[in-house]
Image 1 (tube, rainbow, N blue to C red):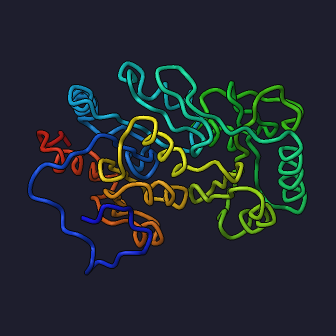
Image 2: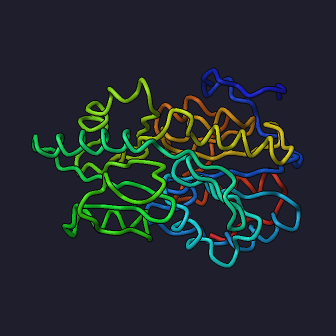
Length: 293
């Protein structure tokens, strides 16, 4: 295994073979939707015993998601000690309740982004905007179909009259498109790519953050803070917002259900999210008992 991370794509033929013995892993970072969670948004069976074993071995476990911190903390309630939560696609990182890093957007940028989404909606696109702050997420669209999508990822959210004028540190602006976000909404936000990070985080979601905010940047800062190398880092992802963190680890895995670009970029493949691929791969590399399910 080379001593530096690979940024060039791997083909099925030249992907390195998995080792037969245990690997020195100190940091495990996993995306949530489409990766750790199955398609029904359920945690994998056997997760909690695995987390306990990782803690005993001194391995840091880090969920990395476009979801807000409050949502991630609720999902891992009771097991969050020592975990690092990389929330809002890397724009907000928290460990044991303490902020490790944040990358808030200037207020003027929030206004510009919200205005662009409102203009898109005025032209007939079925979209809604979520302004993501440290304390809460904020929405101004109140119909039940949109609220149902918001609740999946933002357990702490508030309906306000003007999302562009909230009193909070805004770290991300997310847009939900009931159609294909890659077909319409992402192209409409393309002018922001010159100054911001615009990432498609799912079939219906696109996120806009500061250009310095990224899951990969968050992983690299965490590695530096903990004294952990890319060779000791295991990362799992399935969608385009995971590309940066795949590049931050030598043990980078695309799920079997991953977006084609993610599958191209990763060094290895893991079984799908519906086949408990994350836990099965962790057990194999760290020589843990096979997970249930």
